[in-house]
Amino acid sequence: MAADQHDKHVSRRRFLATSGVAATTVAMTAKSYGKVLGANDRIRVGFIGVGGMGGGHVKACLKLKESDNLEFLGVADCWKTRADAAAKQLDTDSYSDYRKVLDIKEIDYVTIATPEHWHSTMTVDAMDAGKDVYCEKPMTHSIPQAQEVIKKQKETGKAIQVGVQGMSDDSYSSAAKAIEEGVIGQVVQAQIEYVRRYDTQGPWRKRPSVEGKPQPADLDWDAWLGHAPKLDWNPHHYFEWRNYSQYSGGICTDLFIHRITRIMKACNLLYPRRVVGMGGIWQWPDGRDLPDNFEMICEYPRGMTVYVLGTMSNRVGIDHLVRGYRGTLYFTGSGWVAKDKDGKILAQHKKSGGEDIVLHHNNLHNHLRNGEELKCPTELGLAGVVAVNMANESWRTNQMMGWDRKNEKMVPANELDQSHMPEEQA
Image 1 (cartoon, helix red, strand yellow):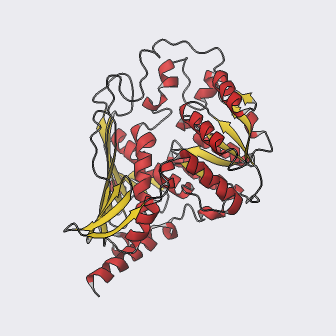
Image 2: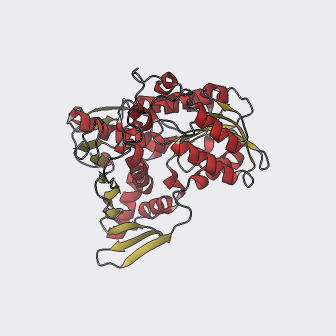
Image 3: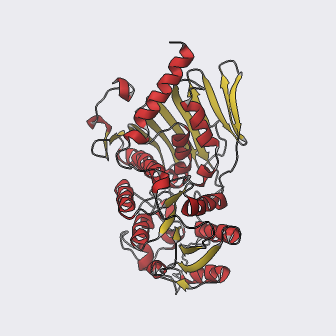
């Protein structure tokens, strides 16, 4: 067999062995969820959480109100002032309790844009109430919670769009097709980053404006905490929740989830075999318990490694790329280009779409109306939660973590079969 044919054959075989065919946790396609509305039916939307990201969902849906025939039927936020402000924009009613929105029978889907520790409970409750869901990333705070969401989705048949808006950029689905066809040969490695630089306060800090800030009279603090450990009002925990593991996974779950999902999509990946997370609280030891600098390395069963670099101290990035035996696929601002070892262009793609919350909502609307495939269904949502939680657990416990595919759970890597061959050759 010629080398090019062999690369293509191996790429296809590994794709089939390690993508949806082997994903026992999720056994349905993105097109199978939810009811399909008529082409002209109005879609009625409710909103849960209208802070920073939630406000973005409000603006996105307002932009789509006429073109996508939307109606808004309720806003909930445990800080009533926020709920009232959003409700005024949307010309609807406001509530402090999200369950009041779920009680509105006419609502077709809800957006959930709350701290991560609430995602699973609200998503499950929404499906139980007969609603489809647009849930911000990460899909859930933990792996068992993500599996609970999947289980409930199978029971109810409801649609869930996970808010990794970069999946509305077709660069990654296009790259997946090219890689599957063997354009760059057998894939062995990928790299990507998410870097920022904070001047003085560190990631997600809002000092001095937050320091000593009293609890707003109309903010239900106990409701905001939910099932998280109980504590007295703490403005840092409320306004800067991404720094605390009770509510968030920090850099991994808030930022890396965007990047690892892109590589998973481009390389037809789901669950990693082994993951290492490294980093620390090096720049801002200010009471946070999540890293301010972090890296993760994921090894996948098909026989490839993914490197994700992250720092909050320096914004100089690295190329986003996938390395294969025949060439390298580089992601660019306009799409991607694949080149061989001598720099000759093998293939290229000019993207359509982008990392756009408006496009991501529009995709969900089209899914509900005509079955258009979701850009970020729960298959990707769960796989992303698995990868980033394994990285965080590796960092916390100072050990490499593994994914036990048979029992669908995270375990120390030394408990796994230690073969280092691609799975179908092991």
